[in-house]
Structures are given as structure tokens and as C-alpha cells.
Length: 219
Image (cartoon, rainbow, N blue to C red):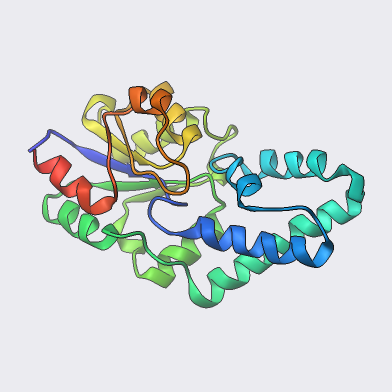
């Protein structure tokens, strides 16, 4: 079995299928407001901070007026949060099995997400996974979002492990760049965006789902 002393999990698109919920909510509001919006536009900004996403929306939809763009942002986000609060979000395939395996092997886990802490806590509580993680590091805990390494550096201090024996699980371009900058080995499990040749060179493996992480760790 590989020598891994701790695992850092991303959340959106890695642990939970939240990206589809965010996209669906944005599309509903865009259609209502006659914004030209589609999945390709949504996918361009997967893995960036909320602030960066919203800044880009203000630039892209500037012709609609600042107030209308802000309304689009606010209503899209509110609709996604309503889904999270009432239904939670689907777990990605293999999530519970991987967490069970890591618990059995006494490998500690930390969640490091660019999302806001209340959203993270809501989704973990809905899925019954709060106790599965030793700590949570959120956008509220850092000054700089991924691809800056700050979030993973802080997660590493929570795990109290060495970078070289820790593993980051990520699905996004910015997350992988952040792990690389933190000098922590990273495995990519693609969600909406496939692994590019550039990303493939930066990761230790590209795996189809979280089930495959178990086999990867056992090697």
C-alpha cells in the first residue's frame, strides 16, 4: 500500500456533485432574465473563487447593466442554496466507500474547499459526513483562493502531516495548480472538465472516480 499519512479532499465536483446544481440554478435565472448563458460558459469558471466568478459575470454581461447582473448572480446563488438546504447534493460515486476505507486504515482526512463554510457544513450535515473529517478549511479561512496554495498549506497544518506523504484529491485546474504550488502530491478525478495534457503532467494519477482511489492507494 502507498505510504499516505493524510488526505486532503476538495468538495465541489469531487466529493459532491454540486456543479450541476450551480449550473442548473444559473441557467434557470439566465433564461428568466434573457441572459445568453450555457454550460460552456459555466464550465469556464469551474474552480475559481466566487469573487472571481462574479467579476467575470459583470464583465461578460455588462450590457445588461450592473444592477441586473448582480440580480442574476444573487438569484442564481440563492436558488442553488435553496436546493442545498432542502435536498443537499448527490455524493460522487465511491465517496462513502473511500471514506470508509480511509477510516479503516486510520488515515486522517481534511476538507479544503473554496466554498463558504456555511455551505460546506450544510452539505456535510445533509450527507451525514461531518464527523468523517478532522477539520474543514474554507474560503472564509484564507485570503487568497486557488490556484494560490494557501488553502492546502493550511489544510496540511490541520492534518499535521508532511507534504510528501499527504495526498490531495482534486477535480479542477485551479485546485491542481494550488496543490502543485503547495508541493503536495495530487490525484485528479475529473468532473465536468476532462484532464488536459498539461494537467496530466502535474498529477500523480488521473482516476475515473473515487472508487478508483481505493485501488490506487492499495498498490
